[in-house]
Image 1 (cartoon, one colour):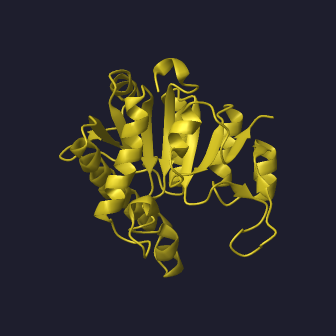
Image 2 (tube, rainbow, N blue to C red):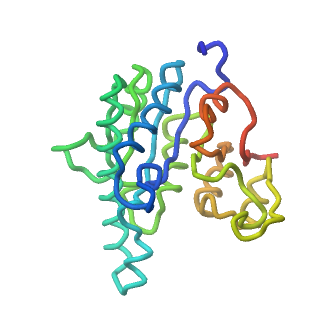
Image 3 (spheres, one colour):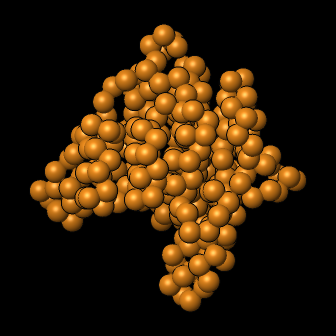
Length: 241
């Protein structure tokens, strides 16, 4: 796949922490890490410039802490730090397969990663490096989905790809409703009205205000990410119309 075949030359890939987890959905699984790194390497080697925002659901969920009576800001900051653990693990896996990678964090921790600086991130992308962005936005009350939307705009990505374990957005939970309908295309307003669980409303609204298309795909369908960057329609596209 050469660059001439690509529809998207620069993407923001949003990964949940569960992408790195073992079968129980928690922790970091070495084989899963290698699998994710392999998928990213294939797409990066095709000429795509790629930034990645990663969550931390495999390590810590702020909502769980809040449910136990923890202060919201404290719980969210713990989640941000957990995303850095995932970012470093993914960086190590990518470097292990020959992909030059930089981790940037919204909360400064210079001993382990660069601070997030927009222009520096763009320069890394232009030089063919994968940039993993940890610590969310650096602020409590914002999810990593919102961080992904924000960073996608800041680095001039052409599309935000939300890679999950489901193959699309449905009008109901397909694991509960056997008649759930797959939605191949949604407007931002429709996504907000349906309250789709794939991304939160703040992230969708930010994308709507800045006309950033969102593609929801199953990361584990073979070649799904590579096919999307070539312009194939997979999963669900959320866009202006």
